[in-house]
Length: 510
Ligand code: HEM
Image (cartoon, rainbow, N blue to C red):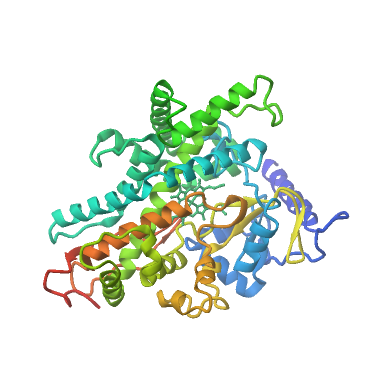
């Protein structure tokens, strides 16, 4: 009887949901109804989620149903956007309509009840949090960040030199270095790569992302009754969250004890300063709906800078090494470009990027071909709205398929090919670089784009200045298909970093 009732309930919800897609009242809500593949009874389009390469599957569906369509996962309506124009219309032109995030039980569980920056909904508190994170990060970028990143890149080159011709799995090294940089920016601590405390925080940040997006955890959002049952993945997630929070709290306590308003040392200081000033001004209840902007918000903003600032950039760097191994002639041309511009001695500076068009184009080409967050982070509509004349009700989950936009054949010739020259040959090269949508757009655009681009530039410039990237065995090149998940990662591979001065130029290449 219960299952019959459950099925009836789901059918009723599906019927009610269908009605939601017709514009009910006055307002600019668009006259057309969004196309949708025929749903399976009760399941809707849930089976689509079985596909690991979801961004590619969404692209395939767009060939049949058009660049924007609607899917239904259980009781959740989802709209997928597959072109640059549509993504820009939603996230830039109608930015406040599309600035929300879907709320979930598991996101609340790991963020003091929804006080997260990247997963938090578009509320007054979130706006304060985002502005604060943005200004603190910008402040940090203005102080001697360039020197810090350049030193890290040189340190990595030294490490690779010390490995001799032994093969390296670069992803771990990149990840440790990007984590060191964000840690130095947020807490003023440049950890030793081998420091056990650093190893623990580095690992648990990765674990939180991995576990939180695993099926054993995401299922809890759709089926509340499972929350009462034992769940080993959930236990592991909460342990990693506890370790993460203990580390961040400890660092914030140290900062509060030694804080001097006249000497802002890092991002934590900027945030503590803001909090103290706000508390002084605000003896009365907080302006935004009576809710208080408390320390949890800065705690979670710091967590997001750590998460955003570690694996994403490291992944793009790893992809760059993999692609460059397939294209040794591009390595040689970048090396020659650097020799010509910098001479044999001078170290690269960030301002050199305008004189190193091939290196800069290679970075954009890498971001285009392998966007590390191919489906961005899901958005949600904050009110009834429309897109390209189609009505979209409030509370709809919206997925910007950045992967599809970066592979749009009408915008990019032979989009699956690695061809950095496309940016240099473009009629308007600056616009071509901007057309790469890998950092999202609008109100929720990635906060770390400038930092990420600077890191990728310095690491690639220093590495290519010193080394050729060669496979272990001639012809044994990395797989370029990758692993699709919440991030688009490359499969593990090994590389030898061989100094340009050493013989064996043709060894192991295509
Ligand atoms: C959000 C990409 C590096 C911090 C995002 C989003 C994307 C993205 C696609 C979601 C945008 C949306 O929702 O529409 C990337 C890529 C990176 C990178 C490709 C490197 C290659 C970084 C770095 C940081 C960072 C270095 C921090 C230092 C964030 C934060 C958000 C975010 C805090 C959430 C913004 C919000 O919800 O308002 N990133 N990111 N990211 N990123 Fe990045």
